[in-house]
Image 1 (cartoon, one colour):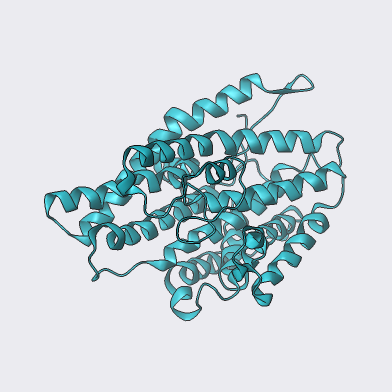
Image 2 (cartoon, rainbow, N blue to C red):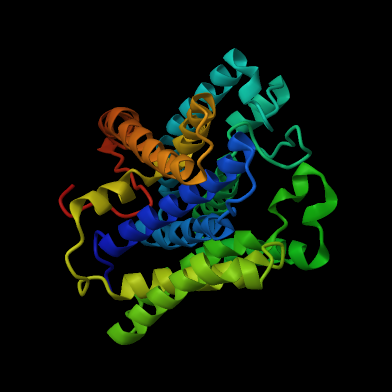
Length: 361
């Protein structure tokens, strides 16, 4: 079965995942900037990352169907991923470094040493000022995970091997780090030894099921989407501490959500254009929201209005606005430039975001 060119439902999931992470950090900023302790942190929002990882595994499999087994498939895949992910991430990291150089009081956790900045540029794990494994741009730890997944996938394509075995087995091996408590050893090399890496493989398996025509019935697909979203964003953290084997607690509901949404493709009601846009802009929103979202509580402090609600609403509004502008003014022009100038064997390289291109694009 041939997968459709564009999974509109997954665009909505990307928008939901990005908004959830923004809202999570909006509640964190209340504590770090307003210094008031009567607004709870919405920890469920961090589960948007799990949804992103499963989506990534799903999309990478579908978008590389014609590359698997080809001689230069690995080159094309690596170039697509590097040109898609790296430029905007480097820009966001550079902005973070410049901001912290001009305003040292804004630096709560980041390490601006040459070593840390260099590791951030090359997507290598580094330890921040609090002893946590986190790059200069705080959300960049997820990009470190993504790039590691892309590396494994590139190697599999290079050897023209079965991507499910060559990617799945290493991820399964690394996921045992949670059970063996390797990840808490305090060294950067243990960063990948945690079960969350298995979520990429969950997404790959969902893609395999869709490619083989094993779609869920409509009623079951809706149940998977609604039930999975409820588990991710309303249930799991209070019941299951996040440090307990993330892939098996958050990853499975995330995989169910993606499987359900993919199964419903072509049977979904009309989806507003603005929601599709937020899905397209989700990468930029994710990268830039931490740089601008703290403006809201900081401004309220100066105005003497320590309102958690206003702070959180302001953070969400500013993050969506800045992220959308970054998408329109930076991300889209960069993607268009690479599409027009980067060639492989005389053929323009088509760029894949976290969803496949529109038909005819």
